[in-house]
Every structure is written in C-alpha cells, then in structure tokens.
Length: 233
Figure (cartoon, rainbow, N blue to C red):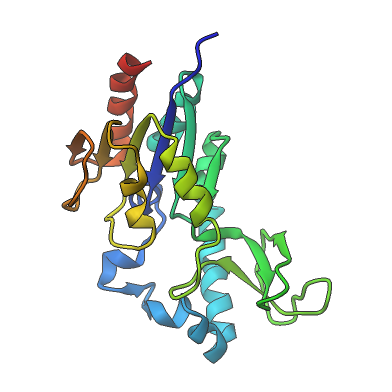
C-alpha cells in the first residue's frame, strides 16, 4: 500500500469568515464593538470577568448557528487521498463539523472551558453559556479555553513538529500577522511546495520553498488546490 503524502494545512480567520464567523481584524482592532484587549487578554479577564464571559457566550451562540463551508468540506474530503493535518488559529469547530479528523487548535477552543489557575489545568467540554459560579472539580472559577494575547501557546511545539514532517504545506485564510502562528510555515522543509490562499495575501519573506500564491477566498481556492495536489500523490 502506497503511503499517503502528508499535507499540513495552516488555517486562519478567513476560512471561518466565509461561514459567517466575525473577526476582529475586519474592524480596525474592534471585535463586536470591544477593544480586543478588553476581551482577549488576561488583564481584560481580571478587570471584567462578566464582560469577557458574555463576549464568549455570544461567540458560542453564534457558532451554533453557522455551518462549515466548501473550504472546510474540501479539506475534509482530501483525507481520502492524503494524510491531512490541520493546524488552525480558529477557536470554532467548523473543521471538525466538516469531518476533518486531525485538527490542532493553536488558540484554544470555543466549546471548551478551563480552570482559571496556572497550576490547575482542568479542561472540559462546554456548549452553553459560561457564567460566574461555574467552577471545576476543585471549586475554581472556569474561564474560556482560549489562548489570549500575551499567553503562551501550549500546542506550539506539536504544531512545529507537524509542519517539519509535511510533504506539502497549505496556508489558507490567514493574514500571517499573528505570531507565533504566522512563523510556522518557516519550519517546513525547504524542498516542499507551499500554497498560500487568501484574498489579500501578505508578503512572505525569507521563505526558501517553492511558493504559489492564490489571491482568492478559501471556498474558491481550496477546491482548486485539491485538484492540483492530486498530481502530487
């Protein structure tokens, strides 16, 4: 049996935006009318837990109302021909809803909650509103399972390992502005092809790989890439 080539896909807000998930970068740093640091930093959490919980409760409700798009579904369908690993900056579960089996969330997951304590890291599924008084097994307040600005990215080492093993790298729907996620493509082996799909692609510096930039949305670009990659099997 021929071993499938490993396709690693880095996805960002653009692919989810096509499903109706709003992104703060579309509004000059405001996210649903809030300064992003009010709702996406630990200082913001300390200053106003009710505001932060309400903000993510709204995001969670919105997630229950949207569906994966053709970009998500096509990536899932690619598993028939390739060993597909998705590393996403997105906190929604649209990749999983579409059927993707190997998804690593760099910035946390909206449908999970975790203990608000640096040495107690209890994580649990959470589909409904999260409120003051919702606690873990030790009575510690729960917070959204989101990696906020200034916090470490626990999944980064695993993400780097996955990228270094890629035979083909896709970058889909990301402005490549948020680090350390934006630097992951530089861990790819220099001989593998890189494809970058985004309607407003950033300039990529110091990349030694063969690079093809496709200035289009994920719903347009990912199906085209799938057809192209069938020649790489």
